[in-house]
Length: 131
Ligand code: HEM
Image (cartoon, rainbow, N blue to C red; front, side, top):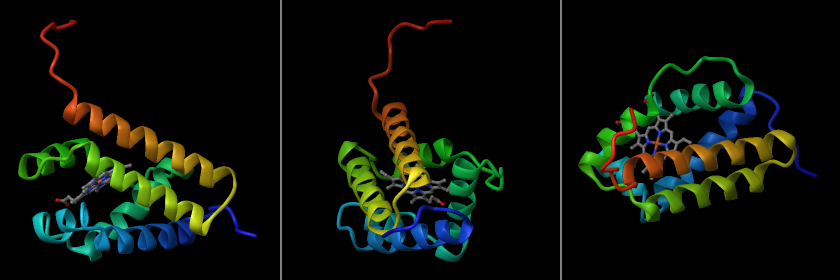
């Protein structure tokens, strides 16, 4: 019987497992390791803060993920294939480690943030300005 995600330690376990898999993924791993040349000791704690803020409302995360991914997209195109790989690994990791209400919530949040990011990066620019 799996436990639900109950605290920051659970999120640390989730995030660490997720990025271990991400690094091994041929589609998106190199974006982290070769393009962004991630400093993991800096990135991982940010991600603990991010998910803690999303799931438990702690407001420990300060930053603007949308701007960061816009800048990343200027270096390497983030298309549906990249977002799909990201989402698949995230959902799989949650299901592998946890079960319960918070596990369901974090998957829904990840799905909607990823879809919004994909939309903001890839939606055709409207020719009409509404306001
Ligand atoms: C195509 C899928 C994605 C790729 C390849 C990707 C890649 C990256 C990379 C390389 C960075 C580090 C950028 C840097 O420090 O220069 C980053 C940061 C981050 N990503 Fe993503 N990402 C993806 C999707 C997502 C999604 C869907 C979310 C949220 C649900 C997310 C949340 C974040 C956050 C919170 C940061 C840290 C921002 C900060 O430093 O304040 N990413 N991502």
